[in-house]
Length: 418
Image (tube, rainbow, N blue to C red; front, side, top):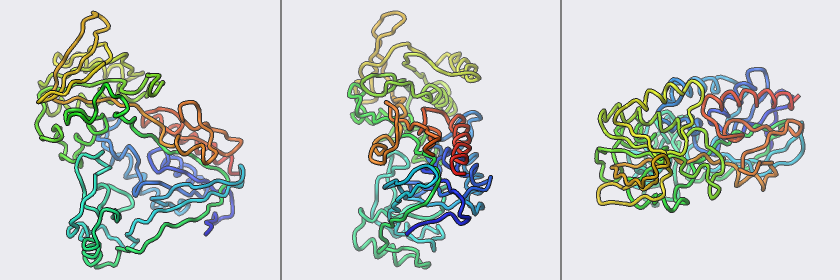
């Protein structure tokens, strides 16, 4: 099956439905281009949807995403596909034929989001939206703000009994257990790659002992713990025993600026830690916080934000890279050398947060599709080929920079699609 641009003019394909993809799609559509917007997840919103707050105003995700969802829904120039990935690309700038595959959701467009199916579902799955901090029923809505507002079924974890219960519970006949993968082609003139980023795998840094203790989490797990729609409804509790931590430790550059892992600075990690210190202070006013760092990078107007937090007498900044983390019966001990004094530091904390780096999500698939990437896996923009990178597919960046970059990417894609 081939999807054509309704107007017959050069259409734009946007790959990725996070803040960058949504921005690029809307910018292109609102100047009259037909846009195909695909996303591999069952929902739009990308990493921003998983944050508790984001800069510059420390807004919740709903602040920026809901209005964009409404604009996408109301714009007839945009055709949206979730659970869809690019499988092949043929052609050249101005005339690409892109093969896509949509995985079965097992829930059709009759779904009203009523939740009756989940109420009778006995089987569970790991909650990937919350980075494994808990479970959901096998048929689930990814999160309370998910767009489109449809449930999705993880059929692989369900018993035959559960599948029948789930199907019988839906009075709208929305559960389709026979749904199959769907392959189709798109004829487009240019492609915007807004494939985003993944947190660097913390298990690769063996000295940081991720997985050895429930007291070691990542900065994205911290976002979910602090989020009102997260696994603890916004309480920052230690996973496993749900204990209120009395002390906190942050490990900066966990994977970044390391020739054995990510050689570049991931740009967002220092600011993410500063932001998460404010989360802790809202809930634990006097808890001691220890931040182990190489350098603190808080560019431009964020310097004052950093200075305010560094003035807190119970927040301690130690210039030194953590060499080891020792699991204790109640918490962990961070081991580092203070680069200023030369002293060896051992600091016990109840909860340790690894400021894991940002890795381009598409780098593993790029070669198979003939998409050019740099030495770090970020996609290289080539306007002459009609291949444009946006947001964190292009470089490590924060939300504001990603949105600005996506606007520029849309302009380049429009020019390539003439």
